Length: 473
Image (cartoon, rainbow, N blue to C red; front, side, top):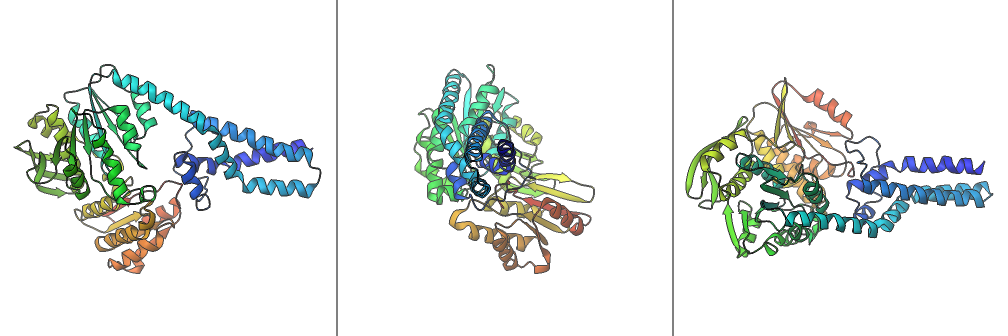
């Protein structure tokens, strides 16, 4: 009988571990980060992020199942007292997350060897790649710049790029090993970072011919600690660029401009007057932007369906690289017109009764400010839905207060999602001039949808600004 109950509890423990396992995967199998937030995560079964049954996750779950089974069977078999068994069931229940982390810790050496194996295969394939390798890093705009550049180059070259926001060593491995073809002529990779050394590791793998450093700012401060560490990490691209390589700096960002001045290799500045590539006479509407593109001392009239000033800066960065690779100005202008909005990055979605600006991927103050400026291009009531910014360390309240204030100044109504930044966003919106009765709160998607239905009217504009993953409240 005890064996039967042991099996029932084993199945029960595995079942209730689903949210723990999901959140552990969502935070990148980072044991330290998960442990730090072990008592603050909301463990929900219903979330937009689903478990991805990778080989790594399968290994972890199998080991976790074995360990849970051994622990449970031991006390059910060797203890006869009902109360002692009940006590051990409660203790095991309370320690499930620690058991999961212990399993992850046991697998770390094995996972390290697997990672090294795939990196070795990737480096070998990249060494034999004869095409041009382009790397993009920065705090904001990496994915947009990558997508824009791919559109500009594909008129002349066969291009392979990292999909979505694959910007880790394993994301690079998957791209190169699964997607890079022998006849591809250009490889574009996005390089992300959560700590010092991340960009250096990726640079050693890729050894790019051209680099782009986009806008740098306060992002992932919980991991980096301060802006100076972020700048040092992004500068790793400069430190590991080969002698023949070129780097394009988006100097609309003061912090990126600092790196431009510091670097003495072959470099090009963009997005300020008289730089290698910049825009003037920028005119934006809800239908797109018109501007003059200045590139390598030539001027062209350009038009795009993309909205947002900082998106045009990303286009200019992409144009600089395309020009260096031999794309003529007239061809660039034609390609710029074909550029489509990047999903979830100031993407316009027109509904019968209202317009949605989907900026749900953005998670920084600079992008939030730009998105609110885009709202000014539209007429009608403006509604913003946001959970605020995360991973901002000791600036969590300050940056969310500033975002709330911007929203309060520019928008009519504000739906604050979730708890993590509720106080900062609310107080910021009030300071920005928004009335208290125009600020609403939603804990779930269902509550959010119900509020939108109640608040919307014809021709209103709804901005989705950031969309936190399930690991955050």
